Structure formats: C-alpha cells, structure tokens
Image (cartoon, rainbow, N blue to C red; front, top):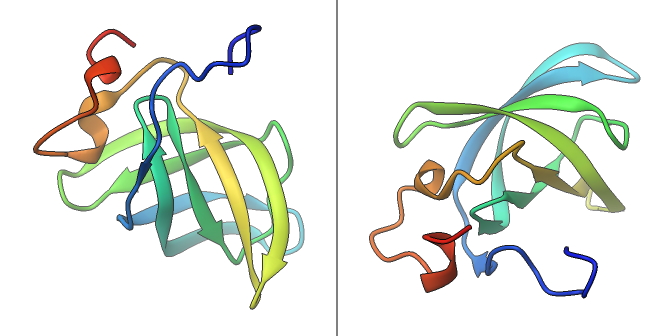
Length: 110
C-alpha cells in the first residue's frame, strides 16, 4: 500500500494454480504446488503449507504461462487447515504474470 493507504493495483479474487520454491524454516529447500486467493499486478495472496519468514525471498511460477518471478514475503497470516495465507510482492509490477484476459484498468498504469 502507498502512504495514503490506497493500493498500487486492484486485487482480483482469483484461484490460480502456482508452484512456489524457496527455503522453509523447518524443512529446508521446498517446492510446493498451491494456489492463489487474490492476485494483483504487484503480487498475490496465496496458501502455503511450508513455513516461510517475513521478508524472505521465494520464487513463484505460473504453470499456465511458465512465467517465474522472485517475490518477497510481505505478510503471513494464521494457519487454516495446515495452510498459511502468505502475501507476496513482486519487485516491480508484473500485470501479465497472471494471464488475465481482462485486467483491471489500474494494472496498466502500475
């Protein structure tokens, strides 16, 4: 979010299968097939079984278009049925990462 509290790009409620790679605090290197809850031009909220740390760098890959991005863990929510809500953000806007037919208008100017 910006200092005024507005988002850099609109969130879209979207279940996208993704593959996440990184290092888990309790299991070492991991590769996990999972899914998003929401996406934006600047990142996503996804569900993870592996434990990650705030500020940690992980790799997220969209198998639909084989695009792969390095992301920073920006938020870790409570576990739900063994999965944690994890918000990740791209270093710069990547609106085409999600392969949406129609993107929110503000994604083009992000």
